[in-house]
Length: 145
Image (cartoon, rainbow, N blue to C red):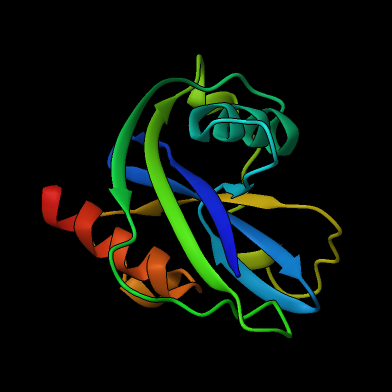
């Protein structure tokens, strides 16, 4: 079985946007995006996910990376291979995105949705994101800076 995930890389002023989320009880820092739904294309999926998560319209999507190794899903009880595709994208006003400065909003913050943060690509550790594939992509982004 497979799950197809589509993620967006929004880069602005040397930073990349990440999303802090609670997924099945685990705190996860990942790139914005999510699961492909039946009947939609990869770019359509990312545009929908950005609209749902951020209330913004993503445009100028450009393929960045498709996973080229096996990755078992950490979130499924049955064996499930993850296929992840990453696109860079733009939004009209990235500075208008509501962001926090501390992971998960900092100590004592309670949240039920995504919280967004900018990670500086210049000096961020690959472990700043939680998912193994995202770590590969973060390393690739840093190498291009």
